[in-house]
Every structure is written in structure tokens, then in C-alpha cells.
Image 1 (cartoon, rainbow, N blue to C red):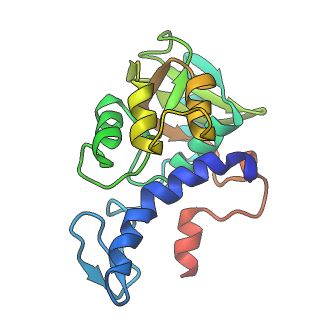
Image 2 (spheres, helix red, strand yellow):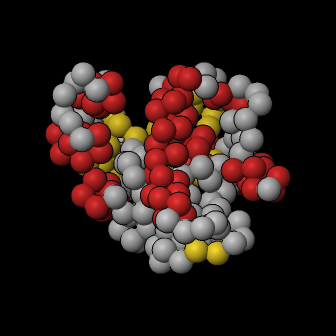
Image 3 (cartoon, one colour):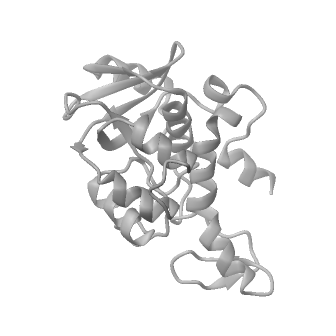
Length: 215
């Protein structure tokens, strides 16, 4: 789990930090991220509905067969894919395209207006995957197929300053951004092939749907 802490940090910051700030301003209850209105019930998932991108078995097989490119993910990337397809980054349904990325960096909001603290992006070395259906794999497991709709070159200096408050590589996330992440970001819709987090994190982690069901 510790190796996936960057993904977990994005989930916590993006989905809850500002929402909790609203809630703490009230006595008790759950606060809507857009309106700021608070209620005493558990509240809807961020964005209004919990995203579930997992395909049924037959649909998953067809989706894999339709893919025309393949990308082996790093552990960090695999953590992000797992969170996305299981609803951990709701309301996102894939990796951010340029409009959402720039809106989050500038305003901490998606283009839709929903609060979102940090970019969720798939970094790649070049533009060769644009327009393809990319099979995303990790350690021998097919995790998802990405419809690679956009490839864009980010302003990493702006991203670092806006996201982490500094451009100094003494900050570990800034160092990772500058030295480890690819020059381009690949955005588009994901189709999930693996339920849960076992393939990436190991056993013992509940999905967002399972957590909500236990409340």
C-alpha cells in the first residue's frame, strides 16, 4: 500500500479535503461539494453517482480483442487505474483530458465545476498512442482498456506550483513530476477489466462501493 501512497493522496485530497472543510464549518453532517449545502445523511458520492467502469466478462473479452496497442504500467500508474475503474476518483471516468487537467491545475475544479484537488493523469513518453485503444497491463494482469482520445504536453512548472505550492525538487512529488513522469499526458475514457484492488495492492482493501455498503 505504501508504494501507492501518491494515488491515495490524490484520492484523499481531491475528493475529501475541501468537502471536509465545508463540513467542519457546520455542526455535523455531510456537505455537497458544489453547493456547500449540508445535510445529516451520508450524502451522495462526489459528483452525484459512484463511478463503476468494470465491464462484464463477455464485454471485457470483446474490449481486449478490440485493443490495438498495449502499455505496461508502472506501479503508480496501476494504482491510479485501479482507483479510477472502481470509483475511487468519482466523478472521473478516465484519465483527465486537457480541459479537465488545466481547470484542476488553475482552479481545483473539473471543467464540470466539481471540486478536484489534484490532476489524475497518465504520463507517456511520446504521442504515438493517440487515437488508439490501449490495453493497460500490470504484472501480468489486464487492468483496463483506455480510449486514448487526447495527448497533450503539460506545463509541469505551473502544475507543481499550483498543486504543491513549490517548484523545488526537495518536495518528493515535485521531484517525481519533473524527473520520473513522461513528457506527455494521455487522456480518455477507461473500461475496467479487473474488479477490486487485489491485482495491484494485494488483498484486504475494500472498493468504494463496498465501503459505502458498510456505512
